[in-house]
Amino acid sequence: MVNNAIIAAFGLDAANFEIKRFGSGHINNTFLLSAIGDDKKYVLQKINTNVFKEPAVIATNQRLAAEYLAVHHPGYLFITPIQTVNREDLFVWEGDYWRLIPFINDSTSVDQADNTKQAYEAAKQFGKMARYLDGIDMRPFKPTIPNFHNLTLRYSAFQEAIPQAKEDRKAAAQDTIEEFLRHSNIAITYEQLKTDPAFKDRLMHHDTKINNVLLHKTTFEGLCVCDLDTLMPGKLISDLGDMVRTYVCPVSEEERDLTLIHVRNEYFEALMKGYLEEVGATLTEVERKHLFYAGKFMIYMQGIRFLTDYLNGDVYYPIKYPTHNFDRAKNQLTLLQQLIKKEPELQAIIDQCLAQKA
Image (cartoon, rainbow, N blue to C red):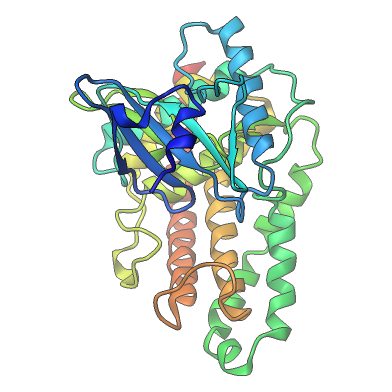
């Protein structure tokens, strides 16, 4: 399962550990190393180079952030890979890239927000990391996945997919295509924002699903952010938008019963409160004005990505049945419509959170 030489590269003896597959992630191969006879544990990961073409960029970004935080916020828990015996962040074995990460004792994670405390605590951790990294020199950082949240690129790909799609797929999706096109102002706004100097670049996580925060296993208070592969330059709307997309709805993007999709105001308030309590004081005026837009941005982008893949013949996202990506797109479109319908009351929640922070 894991060659002993990989473990030895990090100064450990495989004979002293029980090794099991670990976690619910779908990108990297992850294993838990539990010491036999004591409570010492490590997380060992093989990086998926089909997704992350330059693993060294991941390691460099994390190391640079860790060094900055160690100086400016020395008490902050920032998970940093353990170096090999040769003082390298990654170990290469037969062309595969491996890293060893400390296991955080008394921690747990959840795959969906089941109560508002979880949403609040998770958002607070992402906000704290954004606040602590505000002011870091962005120049040495590189994208680990280029154009990951580039809505301009995603919208262009969507437009290109429509005339090239097979007629049966295009006909089946026509109403959904037209509805997404009617919301093209979301893409236009992004194009305007990304060149606005007041809409500043930040070091963002880019994958703020709730299972990327570790919570205390008994109190469920936030401990730290994890899974930092996509830590790279970006905009505030990426992290905030992904929280809105994945926390406020009681069902996931896999749900086919569209009647179950709605926006839970209390979860929206919890995540906004947690996030803005931490990062609110660092926001520019342009960022403050586009906090609600963040949710629209991320839901719209994910929706057109699913629809584009369906029109292209399902070449990117794994599917379990022929209309899987089409159903995902309709799911996200419904969530977008529900969010927009509630804009006045949700914006009022944002305004209240900002006023409390001020």
